[in-house]
Image (cartoon, rainbow, N blue to C red):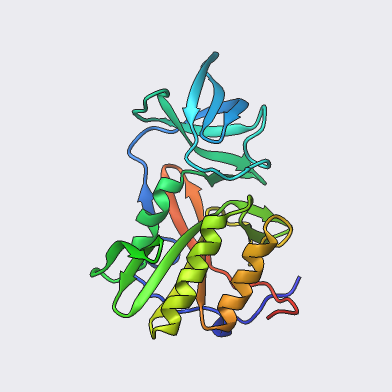
Amino acid sequence: MKERDSRNQIGDLPFRVKEGFSVYEFIEQLYEANVVERINRFLVKVTFNGKEFLAHLHDPGRLKDLIYPGNLVLIRETKGYKTKFSITAAYSNSRFVVLDSRLHNIIASKFLPEAYEKEIKVGNSRIDFKYDNTYLEVKGCTLVENEIAYFPDAPTERGRTHLKELRELMKKGFNAILLILVMRDDAKCFLPNEKTDPKFSIEFWNSIKEGLNVNIKTFKLVGNKIIYVRDIPLCKTNLT
């Protein structure tokens, strides 16, 4: 596996966080539990303290390598209509992978200037952030295979739409950044998941050719804190 020179690939962000610093701290206690079964996209049955509970999963991805019977997860108490707990992270490759996508924009905001707008309507969708002359869309990534991070882990029409909207914005003279948050620290580089969603992959590479900047950050869970580890580059391919 070869890595591309990150200087030719990454759009700089106005960093307010240094490597090794916390970007989020859970105030709730994290408890170890085990997966019994995934009932649907957002509902998982777990065992905790010898009892079975339903836990909310705020990640619509397939997560086949993370949410499967018997795997160790971390849950925390949350108020939900059907559930008392939320899945916070799942164990993989000797580490916990943070799964709660509600945290993505909170984390992303730590890397932006203090003056920014959120949820900006663009075309028929919304882009996560705008600051100065720049639009920024955030994607969370949890799938890593052979030290390569992949997004998405399920087909995403919404993701393709966001890339198309960013391309239209660039044509109008705006800067555009795709910020990918890899919620684990065992990846050395990133690729779009061509096998799972070839249409997204095509849109991804075409967008880069037209000027889209991609910024990829890795994180790890230490105790009750999510720590920013480092940026990683795109993997070198015949398209880079």
